[in-house]
Amino acid sequence: MNVDVGHVRIEAKCLNSTDGWQAVTKHLLGDWGDANPNEKFNIDKNSWRRHDSVISRHTDRSGIKFVIVTDFSRRTTTVRLA
Image (cartoon, rainbow, N blue to C red; front, side):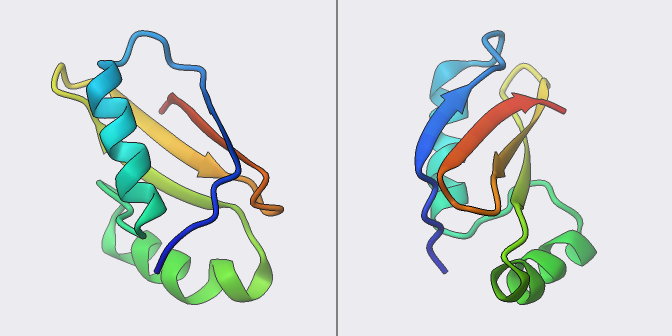
């Protein structure tokens, strides 16, 4: 599953930039990172049919937790602290 992420905006400036962009790439490819199994199931099965936002959860190499959110319109993806 690939995600159309639109414009990518990184709000979490304290993240390791390499880890942040690697996580965005994973998000693009349908890898929801550290999301729990129930969240992953709901994203895979429901977000696309209902046009909900798509959220993945990640941790950078320093242990900083962050989320990547693609809005329901698929125009904007935001990386922010969890």
